[in-house]
Image 1 (tube, chains in turn yellow, orange):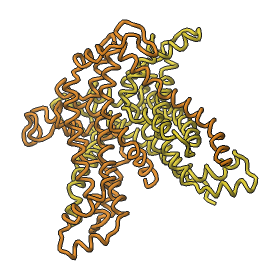
Image 2 (spheres, each protein chain N blue to C red):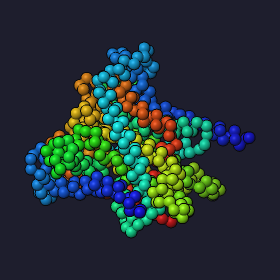
Image 3 (tube, chains in turn cyan, blue):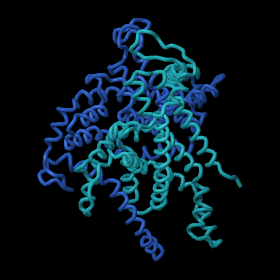
Image 4 (cartoon, helix red, strand yellow):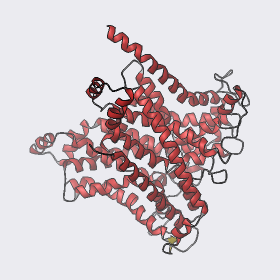
Length: 281
Length: 287
């Protein structure tokens, strides 16, 4: 009987999740353009060899890595600070939690639209600079700054959900541990190191892992804000996969890129999980 | 009394700091509103001097928002409905009606959560294109355009969320098995036991599944981008980007369109804040 209840869901997942993974794996060893009449042609490791010799792909990997590594620590540290600030019951605390969470609720496409205007020539950022007598900049079209501009937006967007998760983590830390630490004469920093940090370690690890997974797949924000430019300095791997597959119709090499990205995300995740385990006392 | 007063006094720096950060975080949304209500050609200020709704009118006409809203509504409603049934009943079975091999099967299904979208994107696109007997295709999926550029193609990847199977199993596992025993002794079928006893107790779970399916499908961008080829299969997220791409961007109308597209999600969020936030931490702690 149980089997009968599971069959519809299992069938769907096998056909539309696991099936595509295998299909994608086959494609990644093939040369295939959907416009041509002929089907995929098996070419072995050629796609993988080609993308590793492709400077464009190398640049996209570096952009993706830099994007993850510069957004992640900032957003987690600020979110933890906010979580600690709001980890006390006082009037109106719910209002702040809700307000801070709003950017997470609004779709990436929509918030990217808002920031597209904020970064535009007459946008809010330049207006504020103008108010302080500074000259405006073209935030999204300078080679050095475009990825940073996108990163600021992503930090802003990720704060709320990270904060809520870390808050849930903070609330599992037993209050009497702080009491005991205080009796032992621990100052605020020592309490943080000895009680808070170990207490929220599982949740902190979860937050970092989820952030890595989402950030490494950055796409909509790039599509809206920069279209991968200028000169590929904001072309993430996911954006490159999209252009390779759907603009140049190279489904085989795009699939190979997708599996390399998969391996990259899995690697980063394992590192984060290892670090999160830490020393057990 | 004294202790209480000291506590509130010590809370002030927190409140001020939180208020400042919250204001800063919400500032872009204020400007978005302000820009949407400012007449075209006028400079934007914190509060529009002559508020107007003409940007909203322009947005609805120019960005094909009516079709986009219709399509997004259909795919979202269907996905919410299927996700509240198929993965939920599977999760129930994994928790209460174990069968030979149910545990490994559960972990195989769960493992798909970790697969990046880009890995399945291209195969799913090709599967939609070669879908048998759709869009002029023959039984073997040749000849036509399949499910591409259709509402059916848009909904394809959304119908069953693996995470919902997992959430449902966790939820039902926390429930007592004695109810089912009693029902079975009374001669109720398994389906009846589930539908009449366990499902009514799972309202919080259903709310969570519904809310997350709703936002996930309504907000998705990449899948509609690859599967939609013309205005007839556009979605709300797609519609706002085509609007932005049209050469000289009219930011006022663009912001108006973005507000309209975001409004349904914001309304659902504001009515279900607790559900949202509880759902997040649920997935976090147990995941």
